[in-house]
Length: 224
Image (cartoon, rainbow, N blue to C red; front, side, top):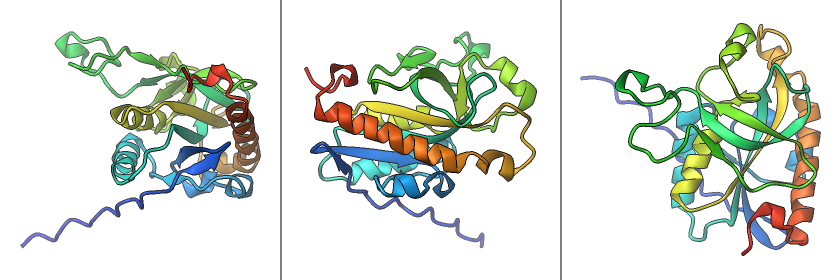
């Protein structure tokens, strides 16, 4: 008799954080990215690493909530061979680099039979933060692999978080601190070296978000 498959723990339906009186759900992949500065401000849902876990866990969490948040914020680290290391950027657009059905005549990066462009614009913006494009996929990118990617930075979750948020009709903001990419990755230390700095700068980005929410800044696109 085959051994039973190990059960994947279901995420606890997180209560969104309240910023400026509004419920905001913060979503992260790994506890290593959740340092003391963020811990003092938010209580994120941890979805795990990669697009599959990100989509499954966020979808399950949202489905279990009695009241949905008004905004989902996906945040954490990213790699980039062209952006400043340890700086935080907000995603202005996101693509899914793993999708390739070009053998069937579909444009690479476009999911068949889904009416979405290869690159999806993220119109909800925090004033005062630089904007960059983002590519999501299941592979860690290093060295020459960056040459095949058009977008400015790479991660493993934001596109999946976006699709889950879209399923529930929720807007999403993506915040990423550049942890690596200037040199080839050789191990975990190359990823974690800037995470403490990124933690502080992501917390500062959340402060900017809270201030924008308080003044109902139209750049956020959350009000008519």
